[in-house]
Image (cartoon, rainbow, N blue to C red):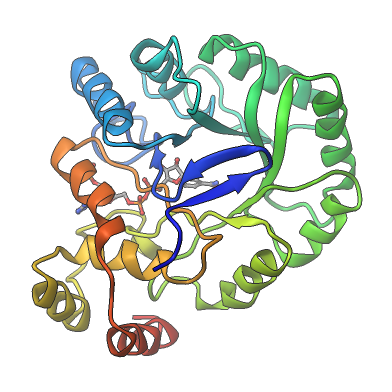
Length: 293
Ligand SMILES: NC(=O)c1ccc[n+]([C@@H]2O[C@H](COP(=O)([O-])OP(=O)(O)OC[C@H]3O[C@@H](n4cnc5c(N)ncnc54)[C@H](OP(=O)(O)O)[C@@H]3O)[C@@H](O)[C@H]2O)c1
């Protein structure tokens, strides 16, 4: 069985983490009409995640709804932070206080974004910062800025998000890269398979987002595939657990960060780490994946 942990630089994380994007609101993230989530429920989910052994939480300063901020909820729920907790945040995108998206940060603006995360999380340094790219062919100037902030001690480790292999080459020429966070899951972006392999060969964690929601960006919006449902039934598991187990089986360097505001789903997601799919089941799911179900 694959190990349950992976190292992000000198930090060890359990391979089943938690994504905080869903916490500030009910329903779709970034929907200006979305109802802010009940505060007590969000805090309960975060504390329960840590109690269940989650020690890798993914967040961003731009994860907020009208009256809730993912970073503030994490701070309120979890600080003083457990020593082994790794909080990964991302910079590049940003939103106005009203929630409208702004253009990608310039390299010079990244310092302010790192400092914003420090203020909101109440920390003196950030464990992992991903440069989240969109529309950039060359990440070097941005990554050099982050490498400088790492040298200053504001950031411990650096990663990339929404990138292609040549971006990883560019960044690794500047500073160590501990993780790549891209959209990927069973039947979702099989074109990422090779890149996932490259990351493994280089010892870089591959951290998919939308491993459950897939292309719909929302779980439960389309009928679950029969194959996934059948395999889940054979194990007394749920389809979401099968999706997470298949994703983890892609390699020991693959970490998942399922997002949920539902304590029951959270427990299921953590338990997915105990679900071992047979070689025959993995072959069936691999075929489904390549067909882009
Ligand atoms: N780097 C990037 O550009 C980027 C982009 C998007 C997201 N992210 C990160 O990746 C994380 C994961 O993405 P995501 O939250 O959008 O998608 P996801 O984890 O693939 O799926 C979340 C959806 O699945 C549902 N769900 C979760 N656990 C479930 C379960 N056990 N059974 C059934 N449904 C379940 C959630 O609803 P319930 O709340 O009802 O459980 C929610 O609708 C985010 O939280 C964020 O931290 C990064």
